[in-house]
Amino acid sequence: MIQLITQNTNRSNLLWLFVASVGCNPLFAQGGKHQNASEPLKGDNKPLNIVYIMSDDHSYQTISCYDNRFIRTPNIDGIAANGVRFTNSFVANSISGPSRACLLTGKFSHKNGMTTNATRFDSTQVTFPKLLQSAGYQTAIFGKWHLKSEPSGFDRWEILVGQGQYYDPIFITPSGRVTHKGYSTTVITDLTLEWLERERDRERPFCLVIHHKAPHRNWMPDTGEIDLFENITFPVPNTFYDDYRGRPAAAAQEMKIAGDEMDFAFDLKLNSDDIQTRLKENLTFALRRLDSTQRFAWNRVYDSVLNDFKMRDLKGRDLAEWKYQRYMKDYLKCIKSVDDNIGRVMEYLKENNLLENTIVIYTSDQGFYMGEHGWFDKRFMYEESVRTPLVVQLPKGRGEFAKRGDIDLFVQNIDYAPTILELAGVPVPKDIQGVSFVPLLRGERPKDWRKSIYYHYFEYPAEHSVRRHYGVRDDRYKLIKFYGHDIDAWELYDLKIDPNELNNLYEDSRYSKITKRLHTELLRLMKKYDDNQEL
Ligand code: SGN
Ligand code: CA
Image 1 (tube, protein in one colour):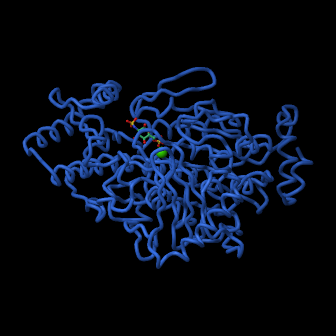
Image 2: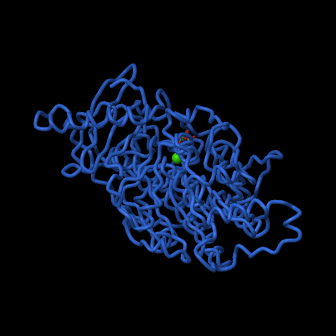
Image 3: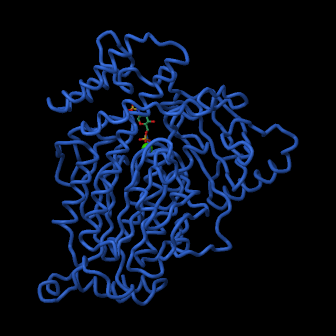
């Protein structure tokens, strides 16, 4: 192990790896004296702890340090305030399982094999947790996993079954299934804090991965948050009534708030015998998990919503906007709980003097539509879903991480694995496609940093009917190709004059030079990343 490490790492980390490998020896551990890992740093040489927190479907529009129209998220904002906020953070494939596989491997979907949620992740691949583990890090994950195969590379894991449930979630552990009473976001945080307090070996650095289920559909709030936002009317996005002209893939999706795909029972929680919808059973199933106290709180709010809805007899735009308002309320209730629970983790780290030497990353598995284009869900390479929030709290005790404020260079979720490896002083395997953004955290602006990102979405035919597509985005333009048996369409956007991506300029002769340039750039990226999709 030491030999492997020598290629790339600095002397302080090498020294630590030696100590760590001796420290793992039970004989040494009994007799040796170790510095408590939660004690403040004495120099710059101690390996960093890594806390990686990722929610499911958390839009940057609903994080107040990105956008303060909807909700205040003081704890997530605090992470950015004590570190950095990435303003150009993107995913490689805007959907859960594939995004998680990009995170673990540092590779695009076509390389790690996890192209859609229906795929099974090949867990024999090299992943960053495995590399950290063999370098002496203790690794743990709690929460959503969504990769079908079991986690590997984690000393301790407790993962939700599939998408998981909001109430009394069932977890898979190496020794079988276990149900934890309570609300998913709180339960996952409880498991995390218990691990930090009771199970963690304080003599070794750790990488702790916390993956929330919230705020994934069907946006079920904690009963403590159930009254929030009920009297607030949220601004309707100015693209809510998009007609999708010139964009056949956008027109063909099935993720409209106004459409049947936003279900009156399951999504909007209208629980009544005379409202029988396609997903009614899913609501019944989800509600079965609430105990009587939770159910009482639930009925108090949603029964009155139901009564009000029946009285109004809404139609057309009034009905669409009523759905939008209900969606926003429930989604934001879930966000409040995410932010509060992040606060609990940050408080623990602070109380235990861990912030000196711990880097905290907060992100989402992709962005999400909060009514833009009339939509919920994600998948498209359009801005709201190709982007994902990314804020990083930097270790207070490490002088080299003095950078604060915004980083506008382009990063992608394939960069997380190499970044975490570099932070841990572990060499980055050559076939990783992402790039470590540690230099950016140090305040550098490398001249050769990527100027454009590559994206490829594969899940079609599937729920929400978003056609397969790939594309390139630079700091001004975006070129997308939708492909498959029932579509063959190009789109070009000038984000500077059309940030909402309403005007497809692909056929516009005034843009032919730009289109050509982006075609060339797309080809270059496909070659570079070895994606053999035909143009
Ligand atoms: C579920 C949801 C979809 C969602 C996918 C993928 N339907 O199937 O709305 O797009 O997950 O989401 S639901 O009726 O089961 O809620 S992902 O974030 O896991 O990729
Ligand atoms: Ca997701």
